[in-house]
Image (cartoon, rainbow, N blue to C red; front, top):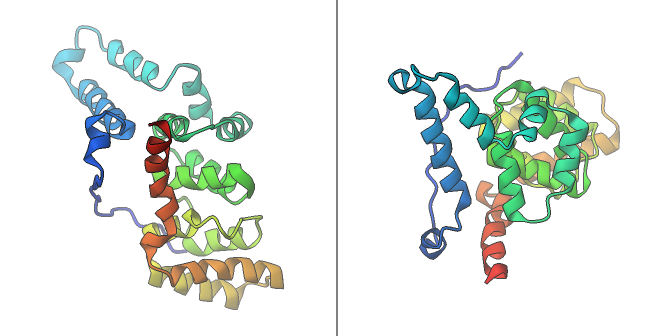
Length: 223
């Protein structure tokens, strides 16, 4: 069985509209800086020796109390309701920050399954996968088989983008060929999974163009 890659280079965020940063609208960056500060606090023995539970309590407050429990337990019903209730980009960022505190396998399983369910919730779950970038828990061929048998909306391009960033285009194409040769699929299933290969032929950046445009559109709408 092929295993998912472990290490990848970290890509830097490029801000094309510095006025938004100056105005304090890049909430993701601010929240990431806060998370980093909390992490530093958690790892500092000198500061935590007097009250070692203080930083942990601060961390729980940061992930918003009640949300902390469903993130840890990955209650799928609650998680789906949270995704469906996201009204705008700000709420999406808040949810991504809450979910991002969980690095367990259940986070990927939940988001990947939801991203293949179709509808608005499926599209948002796929965006959350791109935003949080959880480690896949199954090999590429297994994930493609799940896509073939799912209700994935083939216009949700964040799904192939996620697979490309983790496995690479060449490996993804090899896994696709192996799946087609070794697995019995219906014509509909084969057509669905073949769409992954279709999107793979496009420039990868084009697959998440609308995703990257979302915060800019939201900022312009709020002006």
